[in-house]
Length: 304
Image 1 (cartoon, rainbow, N blue to C red):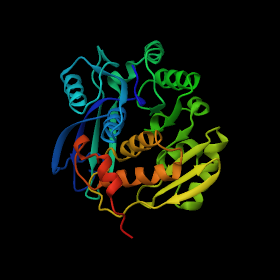
Image 2: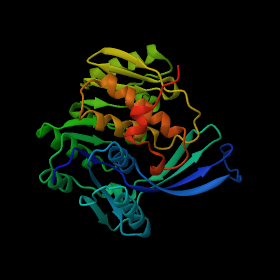
Image 3: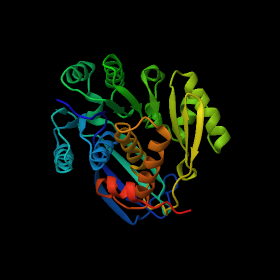
Image 4: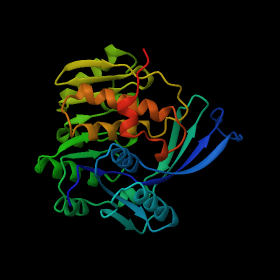
């Protein structure tokens, strides 16, 4: 099967908790709202790519449970082909995300079925598909991640790594990566550099290049993004919005990056569009339905 972008990644049914503030250890508090939301980094990125009017090939796994059926139905409604999504005897992955009054989120979760993707399955899928770009994160099994990047390299597929979540990072993957998209927490986990400003972001980018990764976009949240292409650095400001829900913003950024790489290799231009898309996403509550369309991103007027 031919697709523009292969997305190997997690597919979850997440629990979103909106709270005025995080509870203290051992404390019980009332929250404002609890919502069950189809998610997972891979699924979020695939839906973003679809909204960018590209054809993603979603490669992942769900459980044979009600959650698995729900997330599969959601993906199909969003125009995602489910041909390469396994159904396994495990629970569907799920994360609990707590969102405070500032729109920031803290998460805990289980990979569930996402852990069941094997090297042999990845090898089988890559022998059947054609793609120009692989977009991958670190929320599935280690063997599936390594098998995917190796298969992509063998076939000349451009590899974009969103090294999230930080808890899943392992260094063996880096030699196969063409472009990496870490946030501040992930950057610190990889480079030991705490990114707080442009100077520290530049230092972190240099360390990423030493790992053999030619291109990096170091995401600094509301402070913007540092793009480093073979050591040539450009800083891009974030757009000015009120954050109400940051869940999925990084996935939105990654999906737009992958989709725009089909049109241009100008990573600064690509990062600008991805920054706009992520800004629009955090300004809206909700999951897949709050992801912006290509038209919204292209026509957005950046406020000075």
